[in-house]
Length: 187
Picture 1 (cartoon, rainbow, N blue to C red):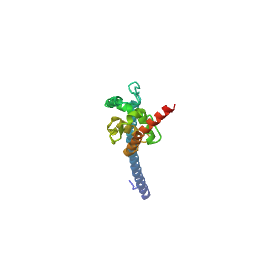
Picture 2 (picture 1 turned 135 degrees about the vertical axis):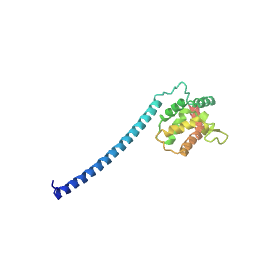
Picture 3 (picture 1 turned 90 degrees about the horizontal axis):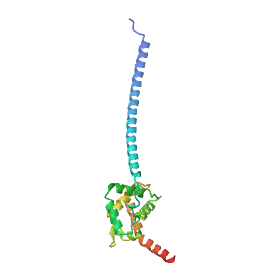
Picture 4 (picture 1 turned 30 degrees about the vertical axis):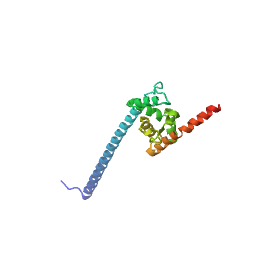
């Protein structure tokens, strides 16, 4: 047996070195593929969960015979507060208020409050119960409004901005009642 020429030995080393490099690259590609597969599986799971949650909310229809909105008296408010203890009802109300939409935070909250409350009941409240009025922030509907805003276009609004918008709308209840009375008297 003869030894291969030096050139062949160098060629063989170069080929072996190149094969080792290719093997490392293939391993790196394989690891990257595994990471991508894991990410896709996690995303698919999240998408399926979100879709399922969305379908569960959208499959419920608000029973308008139960919901006597806008609420215009203390009994209606008490009834709403009692119904809010039911988690499914709570989710239905959040879903219904989220659908109202609006371009700005104040518009969204104004639409929500207008849908749920008549000004004759809102005039009895301030957000924190100041000036001998009732406390709005302890009501379940307050949390519903926060949850509905968080599901809207304004989901990144701060709590302070939401509180300010709710407070401004409630403050305007008296003037809206007076305007409505003036319109009625002028007609």
